[in-house]
Length: 245
Length: 245
Image (cartoon, rainbow over all chains, first blue to last red; front, side, top):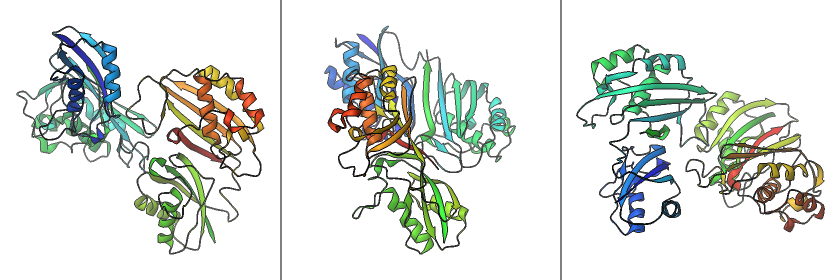
């Protein structure tokens, strides 16, 4: 069977997230599977690198699927571009080794969180950036973030719905930059628990607003207690940026 | 009477344009006037620097209004921010000399037209950038634009609905830049006829796509015939960027 790898960009605003749901077809996975199934005449199931929650965006999500159809890669591209809703775009398609698996082979992932940090919200970015009206202390946030780098048990930074066997993950880097009113937090790690990126961001924002001290992060991490971390940041500022294989 | 000058940013996507209409309150002017009238208890009329068409955006539109109310400038700001829809933001308010007039005193205006120039559209920019899927020849566009610089009769570049007495305007500069897939056309002039910026852009796009030669622009300008110029570019890529006083 052919194994096809796709790179997918989506504005997640309208969707219930990546994963197919039983009674709701407003998920990215269903939109793509429905079109691929129609195109191939097969019952196509796509394997994503991981799920994204409702409202979360992707710059470059990766998914693969197996098919017996003989349709060329560029024809698949054209077909997808023609029939997908305009908030989902397949930006790349390649035929890969049949053993390639989008989730199992992912070595690491990068997420970016975008914030509009100015007194008033920006009418053009309001749906794609979280708005924080008080000035964030970036240096304090960087210091707070430094405690999260490395291999840790991230139990304090996961949703109670998260059911992974191990809560140990490695965060390789957290970069925080300001460009005028735009603040971006880029997080690179070998994997993330449910809501982990958004809870890390929510906690770092509290540090940037002086509601927590940078060194509190160390303590929160050690206590393995979700209630000590900050709130789960809004999905609208979150982008799955890259999957590294 | 006090004279209040406002700087206004808006996402024009949902609106019928700047100017108040008799039977439709989906205009920027009505949204602002209604709130100011409610706040002051007066029948407030605002004077804009000029109209923007339906779907056109503004980074910094300017308008002023006269009032007898004694409400402070920062309170007006807060009130506007609280009650305006989230796609309109008043970014600055100042009390000015009573003779200041947003339209009569405007010395020049700058518009920016934003284009996403890549094979596939960008899900995040699709509402705010015009999408052109063939690669634009920026050098050809720059050469074409050079014929428009200076004082000219722009009859070929105005909507037939334009009813200004004179069609002579001065274009000070047209800057065209590419940053990866983003192409921006910035036009600075002492005033613009109805649809003039969008027809200039529509014509320059045809030059960039080799449907017209750069030197055709010179001819189009001289013939004073709207039918010779290119189409009126979509409003979604157009931004009123600045008013110079």
